Length: 553
Picture 1 (cartoon, rainbow, N blue to C red):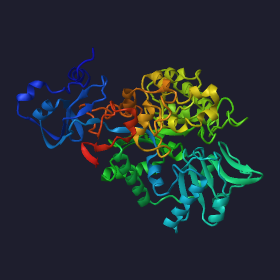
Picture 2 (picture 1 turned 45 degrees about the horizontal axis):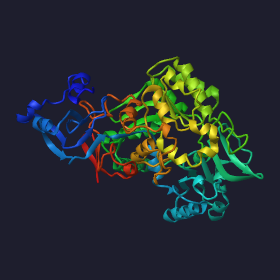
Picture 3 (picture 1 turned 30 degrees about the horizontal axis):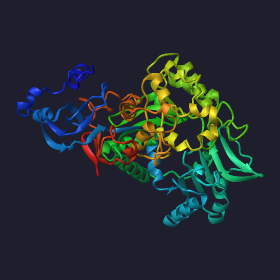
């Protein structure tokens, strides 16, 4: 039989107990900053217990229990009647691009475009809106959503914008279309070659399509935003995150300068989002942090490096063991050499920093799992992560458990890719793609994220995709490869306590329990009981960070 919430807290929370019902006749004797009562509180503790109320003081939860217990014990400066609504720990996106998302809000939004003609229309509108901008940038197109599912060419962009450089990034960030002006500025020619990238050439002429590392040659020429633009990007991103219930996230791929800016904004109060930083593996970042060590505050945690293993499945950059089913002789490619992966693994194994590697294809997952295993040597608590873990050969799956490697997945990738992933992989391999349940079973836990802005920012989309494995129109009927669906409890844990654990933060957030940060979200309906087709559209009523309201509908 499950232990009661009171017994669990007594045993597991080192004396921070639920309040006995004998206090119901006593006058409030303790003070609190906030009491939330009359709710359906999902604590997400080990037993997945529910409660009705909790008290907050100095930004942390001090007690959890029934409405009667908490209100009789605590006299609070502020009280919130939840009116029976469901309350959860603040949602934690385990893999996102928070800063880049904020910057992208200032670019052309190409998500959902149904043709390249529509892309060009949005780019034209962007130019009219910002006629003096030195560059035209945009992100979000996906040729798989178009009637003609082929990469576009730069001809129209060249004709309309011959003197203004343009870069329009595919939704996954692993392909881009640029015009001739951008190619000229980057010094790219039909003969340009590099490791882990491709300049597409047809009939001896560049099409304007760049894959993976080739994109960097152009993006390096775009002037960096000034500090005010960077600050505004972070504030805009935070505002949108709070509106969908996100209170913590991992930002994958930052430099020290951005981490320092976040830290300064945290200290000034301008930024309240809790951020777990995955650093770019530049020499400057490695030299500084491996010498100075982890940097940790209540809101910022810098303790990992984001390594880039391969590209994306949609742009055929993911490295596969066997050729692409829809492109004979093409295997995708790694974004660095095997030696470079081994060298950085050996370097990070001597430190307290995580190695978190982007790996989509089954070949990349095999290689990185083996390299991790060599560096880790067996069971450990270093929590090195494989980001995405999208296609895993069955022979390699046990390696996650053998070396305690954490698979960090984004459920909406499955429901975005399911229309065409079978074309890329074929019938033999598609059952081994997006294997969330099987990955969960390797270590008994799995962090969930969205990879926004690659996918939508809303964590309820993540939840729905994990549980129902359907798109916004609830297709396909019965779900996509449901043998790898997660239960609602598993999905909620993945978005809260398991995401915190993946960042070594499970002792400070991810559950509603005494001693934890008072980060929580209140929804209009109960995510754990509502019909699957209603999950995505549930509204966030309140978002709190440190016991302070940061969003109200």
